[in-house]
Image 1 (tube, rainbow, N blue to C red):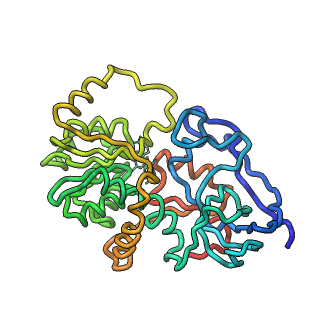
Image 2 (image 1 turned 135 degrees about the vertical axis):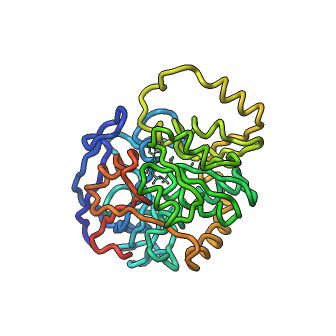
Image 3 (image 1 turned 120 degrees about the vertical axis):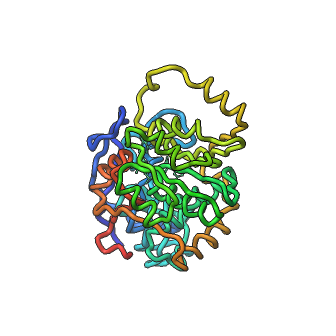
Length: 344
Ligand code: NDP
């Protein structure tokens, strides 16, 4: 064993607004050989997720930020390259918080073996991984959809939103997807089987959303906030549930929006229509993981549930791909092929 040539992406600057390539630095540095009790990972696929924008900021959040000069955080599918750890052998496939790098040392803590490995293996980062569980658990615990109800979700072609809509259909609901652009809306209906799709960039978006939800909205799975939330609020039925999963339209914001203070209007709606709004983080619901894997795994296997991936080639392209995802220039779960020979 010897040090392994390796590439890593560091956070150099905390962005103001939209992140820029200069906020990152790509460095080459050898990954040392593992000591006793350690193993060395070769990163195959890196997951890019909207939460990473939050980790670039020092603002108070539910998780600590990446240090300046530190390796960007991220989950990966990796292969054990060499091991001096009794529990892992070279060639093992694992899910690891390896970060944005081609090789990393680990003491084995937190590694999840991919046995059997899903097909494609990248599903472990998407529909069968953290985003899939987010959709499944948030909907089950907070959305609590009942047959015949209308479930609306935005960022609907992404890994969370597409799972929300498809699970809602499984529960006998009407699924309404909100996405940016005609092509994504077409995918929602034709590929994912949503009942209706609405383009949030259309100038008459609120009217189109109202037309797509003739019986109002019973569950709004909140992924984006902003103008979409404002269009949804008047449509929420009595006793509607709103799992607040993400607010991606605000992640690059540097100030509050201009305009009147809308808090009283929102609170009046919450009170008079008895709307339940509750935020959550995926790790609040670990007890849902076994049934999630069983149900969603079964639906994927029998072809009644679908996933879409947006693949990016090469670790050095990860910074631009994160910027693109936050602006909606991805269609599906963003994964980066880090190792040229990464298996599907
Ligand atoms: P996506 O792959 O869906 O990527 C984000 C999408 O957000 C973009 O593709 C874009 O889709 C949409 N978007 C960006 N800006 C706006 C805007 N101004 N208005 C409306 N839509 C916008 O991401 P994920 O499926 O991975 O994540 C979805 C949400 O879930 C995020 O908010 C994320 O932070 C959250 N999340 C929360 C977790 C938790 O534990 N609470 C765990 C995992 C994810 P489009 O082009 O269609 O507008």
